[in-house]
Amino acid sequence: MLVTEKPKPSEEVVPARAPAAEGCARASASDSDLDSGTGRTKAPSRRVLFMDDDARRVEVFLDRCPEAVWVKSAEACIARLKDGWDEVHLDHDLGGERYVDPSRDDCGMAVVRWLCAEPRPQHRDTRFFIHSFNFSAASMMVECLLRNGYTAEFRPFGFDLVDLLSFEDVSPEFVRRAARSRRRRTWRVRLRGLTRRLKRLRRLLLGDRL
Image (cartoon, rainbow, N blue to C red; front, side):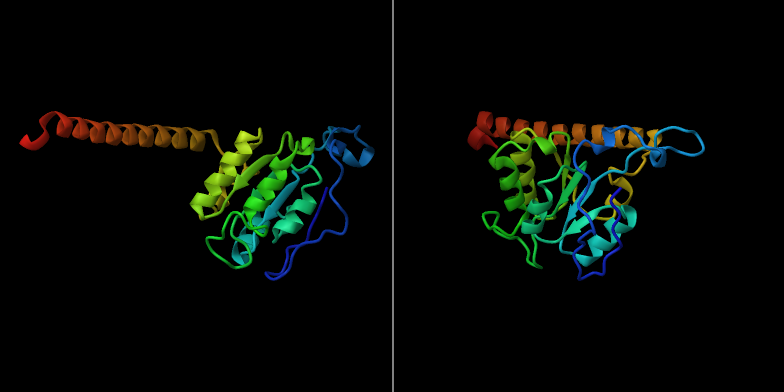
């Protein structure tokens, strides 16, 4: 299991050793891999890569997922992505800038372009989470990843992320409440869209008599 110390806000984590090669979790268990109480094989730790340059986000994320590896540049992230990961969390705007041009080589989109340039079999089962608040660039990143066969979703980093990180256990009741909430929002959106279409149709039919 890869263990990293919690970084200082200005540091980039560079673990003492590289993450274990893909497939090691499926290797036969040794005595050290067995739970002394049950004799069963211990569940392998998730291998999580987190790219962001914001010290506050880094502190929150590593507090909840201390085994994660943190990188703060696209170049460092691409170097890490040559290994397999269970989860990869990507920001877009790096280097303290906002609304960075996605065509640049020092942003999250550069990482996505590298992933999509050719098949990356080590990431066949990786889950990608885009947490940038640059909604335009984030949606572009997600769309490109999905179009190339990756599992990806847009999940803005914020207060809710603390309790909704994928490695957290979520109660069934919470899931049910979230599903009901999504359904209600979906019907409200559909109703607003139908109302707008009816108004447009009314204007077309009545014309100047409105």
